[in-house]
Length: 302
Image 1: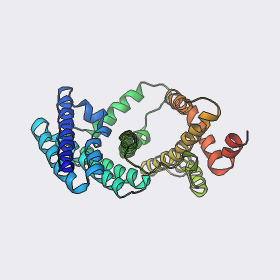
Image 2: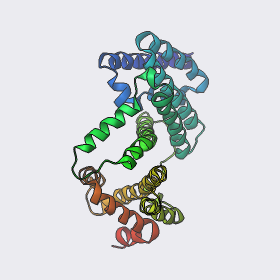
Image 3: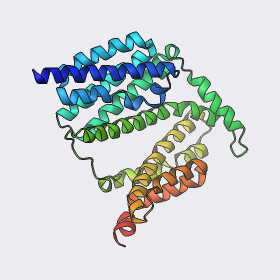
């Protein structure tokens, strides 16, 4: 009896939280579903972990009804995505799935949602990819250091899906971290996160990424075909992200060693302010860390 009462109480509380979220989101012109979407799966996630997937379906249905009553059709779609994320993540936690599985399923659902809202149902959600990229191009035209040509314009349009995917990854990471912090706060057992010092890009992938950095230069020298040059630019961006990822890990590990807790944040700000030189710095640090014993020499042999 006490257990049933607890389930009902927790369920009502989670539905009330979602109702409050929907009301505030609508009053503030849907700013929460744009900038705090990573928090939306947490109520149903918590309930799924605590009371099981079967009971969570009932609460999820209640959340859907309250979102339908208080929200808009667009908000209802985002809420459905958040509920799918929370149910899948909570099920994974209850089955003691690895953190990689939890993060992976979150990325998959979030990326699918973003691609649907940006491309498949763009008109319904008020998105216009051509217009957004056009605004970026207009801004770049104001910078004297950048020459806008057909190749760069086509590259910007082609790389937009990569931006969406990267946004989905970042949002999923925030959801993952928030969920772990919440469960630890509520004294719910979770598997420990993988130690940061064990995260490393495989050396073969590093060599491949290093070779692919030269693809734009080769494409430009070998052909005038814009499509091939755009493809080469996208390949370059993917290879660059490999080195940026590894550099961020290296700086996170180096921060306590050099007694600068905000070293990764400082590096990120420098990258935003000085993207061109910092790109080369990140490539050098990433290549040294992936392809040599640079990490051991700098961090662990002091």
